[in-house]
Amino acid sequence: MGVKKVLVKILRKAYRVISKMPRKENVVVFESFHGKRYSDSPRAIYEYMKKNNPEFKLIWSVDKNSTKLFDELQVPYMKRFSLKWLFLFPRAQYWVNNVRLATWMKRPEHTTYLQTWHGTPLKKLGVDIEEVHIPGTKTDKYRKNIIAESKNWSYLVGPNAYSTEILARAFAFNGPVIESGYPRNDVLTNHTPQQAEKIRQSLNIPKDKKVILYAPTWRDDQFFKKGKYRFEFQFDLNKMKQQYGDDFVLVVRMHYLVAENFDFAAYDGFIIDASNYYDIADLYLISDVLITDYSSVFFDYASLNRPIIFYMYDLDDYRDRLRGFYFDIESEAPGKIVKTEDDLFVELTRATTEGHVDEAQFKRFAERFCSWEDGHATERVVNRVFYNQK
Figure 1 (cartoon, rainbow, N blue to C red):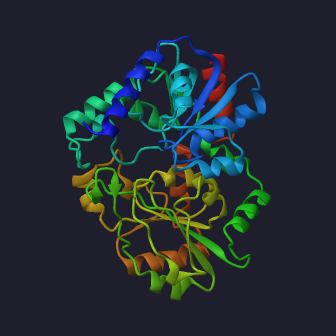
Figure 2 (figure 1 turned 180 degrees about the horizontal axis):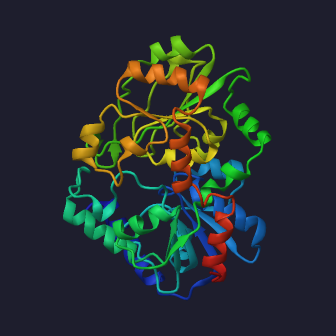
């Protein structure tokens, strides 16, 4: 057995022992996307509690390669799997997380685990996936892991009425779903023009240019190895630069599971790679139009009442084989679905000058999926979990 395997075995055994020790009262441990981000609903809850709930000790669990940002922002943290983490994480009174934890990281009896998750589902999730195409994972094992993890959750956050039943079923979760809206989306209602301008400046976006945000998801069967996915652009970046470079910048936000390092040096001044930018909500605020595919980003972005384009070049395969959908996106999408590069550019020109392709359809979508996004979701979640207010 190698040294690394021995250390992992010791860590897991120590975790089990320490998790039975007395809990650390009022300690809240936050984690986002496996400790790699300062983002999403955990960030929103942390910042709210830092301002409004001084009786709690707040600390982040951070991947060892992601500490720089936390240092820059002066956010208190501990390195994931460090000695400090080992003696605090399994003893904390509260966990706040937005993805699944490793199967060995069981919730101790004394800990309240708030699972915020990270998106309204279009594509099927969890046990609803009929056949898993993730590398190194068999469908039965995947489902067992989902069920084992959700047994640890004390609460699950629901972004809208549509999601409440789906998320509970997909994760086989029998506990309370907090019908609050997503804390991460409060900023989409509460932001100021000054905030957006500050973000633009940090990304060196010229004042005279508008922003196209491209945020696609990953494909389960396109990968280098387990946990490392690849992505190929299905439109000509040179052609897009020629057509839109004078008036727009393209902000590219790849999914956190996509492992490729894209070289956009040839598109300097037009493409900004924001894949490692810590929170996509900031990118929503500065963008004038969103291009996506099956990613849940469009549910959140709809709160801003800005045009959305769906570039679904592989729609039939993704829908019928790879994942499957919970509703008919072709009839309910809050924007135009295009499948070719030519149609994408035609719609981009139209959307950036005329806005929504169908105002009534967009309004129906927003009423169904964004009605809880009133800027107070975080407050509702905090009151429920930390003060037991219903």
